Image (tube, rainbow, N blue to C red; front, side, top):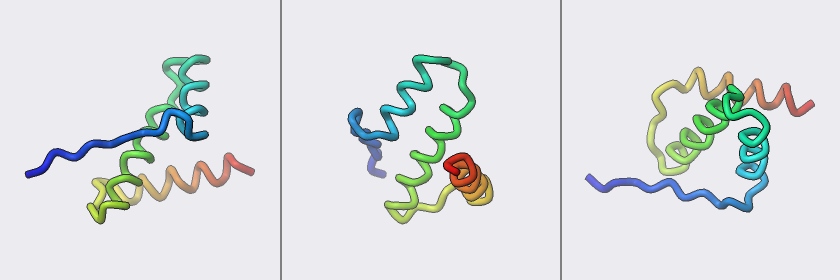
Length: 68
């Protein structure tokens, strides 16, 4: 089995936002949610099923509501 590698662009606005959140509060619960979303998004992009699609959908919905 091939080991997968998740590569992140440190200059991407999502990662910059996460860095800002981390700098302000290392225990911000959004960091775990955003990390999970990024990981699941990468899996889906590769055609791999994610562990909890219901949670993924809820996290995406929460982000959409917060963006308003």
